[in-house]
Image (tube, rainbow, N blue to C red; front, side, top):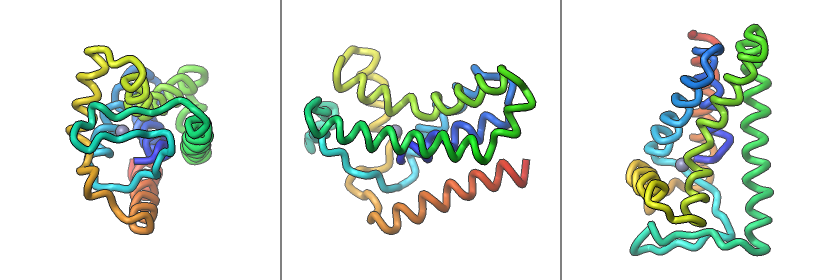
Length: 170
Ligand SMILES: [Zn+2]
């Protein structure tokens, strides 16, 4: 899913434990993999190179396209952090600096698995390879990616459900 969805979910879940940053971080990481398992849509990255026969050979090429992608990914992350802050700041502000740490930890946890994909592309170390294998395995079938229109609407709907669940039910 897009980074904004992962960041908002990490933050939303962190509100359940606003003074426990480590747990919020771990919950964020777990939420990332669970969200990715749901069939969804992702935008394309110009610098990404995909090997249809072996996804472990996928890569991101650092060049002009990469900087373009970085702006896109940065805006996506910023959107998630901004919305997370707008909707959930009250849960964290009551807990002072520990609350701010938990907000950050939840967001980082939600985003981390995708940052690790990039680390894998560049380093290919055994531990990163194991995580990449798992990420690819749990990720919804890449061949059955949703149409952009349906994908955007369904992902926005999912985010709305997550926000409402935390704000109105908890
Ligand atoms: Zn992912």
